[in-house]
Image 1 (cartoon, helix red, strand yellow):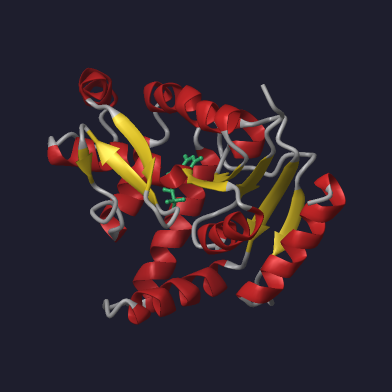
Image 2: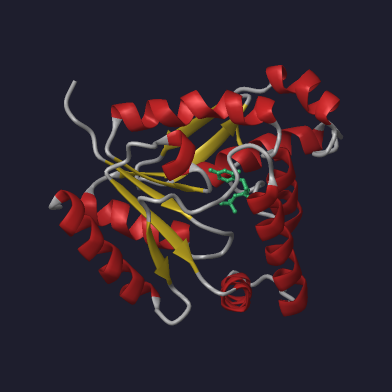
Length: 226
Ligand code: DC
């Protein structure tokens, strides 16, 4: 099988991973894999069933009834398919953000999703973003980047994003959610968010999107010559 390239981007909620990864994927002709969307789909499924994301027994009992698939449309946009239903837009609520962070702490959930993520990377050149891509999912990724920014900057960006979509936002609530998710994602027992030793850290607090893309492109060029 031909060699495939993998670029792993990890970092906390709201650091700009998906915006940046999407742009880079388009420029490089790679698949963009948003792994957070997979956890969100699991959280949404359990939520529909009324299972609390903290209820280990409930999660273990119902998880086998879920099939999750990733599909790409003609524009290269990732769609999440839950038991045959496209839930791409349903999983983007603040409620599902917090619930997906809680759901992702369960071993049974992480085990179920691990192989599926690795399979995409075996088949395609990928830019994959998440929390444990460089550390667990693709430990041999060709490039590992840890994208971060101050919580206040991430909250401000999130609010601007919501406003652009015509949705209401409250800075204090958004900041509180971000701080809560940072804590949950870095303190869970399995595959917590952390920077690997072979990751390159990029703090985007003082950079705009173009600045981050340029910085990432020069890292990628240096590492794999693309
Ligand atoms: O990237 P996101 O904000 O859409 O992710 C939602 C949640 O999913 C996040 O708070 C933690 C979890 N997650 C994870 O545990 N591992 C990943 N690789 C990606 C996301």
